[in-house]
Length: 147
Image (cartoon, rainbow, N blue to C red; front, side, top):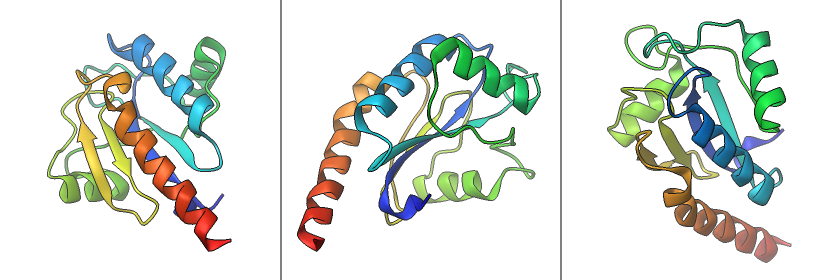
């Protein structure tokens, strides 16, 4: 999978958070509507906030797929903040100037790897959807011009 040709929404997810149900449903709807050729949600389970992702990678993925029919990539559990933070999240936090302080932080990344938006969990997926759609539309138009 060449992520360089896609718009990505990178999210630190948790299975037992107050934001879990609303976010997983909306993220899967977004994936269904815009993915997988031009867009992907990239989910990174994280147990750093309120210990709300205590299970194994296998259990987390099984929960997300069974409960929300998640079709987007689910990565292994990582740290997203602090000294042990995964390099991807260090990059996202540094370039956006916003470090995750809870579950379901969302980073919108353009196909060239630039962070073009970052939102905390109180900002719903529906609220940021227009920005994501606009970026995907721009990518599709650019791909057409390349043909």
